[in-house]
Image (cartoon, rainbow, N blue to C red; front, side, top):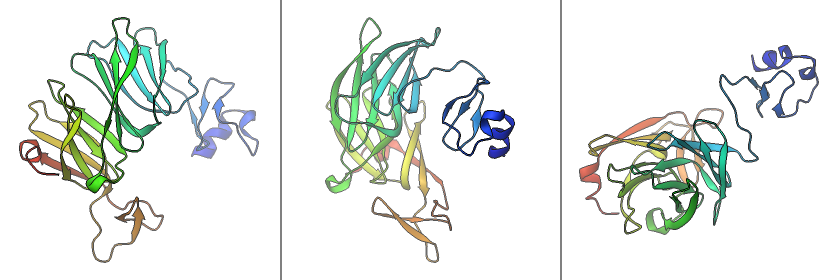
Length: 246
């Protein structure tokens, strides 16, 4: 279907090679050779978009790119600022805005959680860079995160550690880590802050008879293509999880 879509787009697509990017008919060729026609407006950037979050007042969109945080006006769809990351690139997923709109939190590659402070002019400046090590100090590659209603606590998926971390954002430290499934990618927390649901991209731990492959040092149940054979959601009681030791 992808090839048929490309060929139907016009003579420019008949060649053996098709350049990734805009097409003459207003579409966009993506690396999978598919042609997309966005339903609404689009904004081009030199970076790869990974995730985004809307400010509480719905006036600003923060886009997590590979090497920068884009600050965009939600009404005009214009980029106000491109704030390069101070230390390292961004991880594949994970951005959240504090309830008061004053801080944007972005998970980075390695073991970092970046703090972007929102000024009165709507632009951001980089603040602290919090360490989020995995168990026994290993790499963690943090991904999705959720914030408490008061903005003082973050729950962060540590994908390489296979844990959900409770982070005290005031003190800037990890308080607890709780094992979840393989490669946790995103987390949603209930409005009362009592329950968390964690999506595990690598699924459940392998069982006897499973085809197994290693991913960041962890055994993963995979299919014949080497793709995770399962996907799971872990439900956590956060009252108990926050009281658990690392």
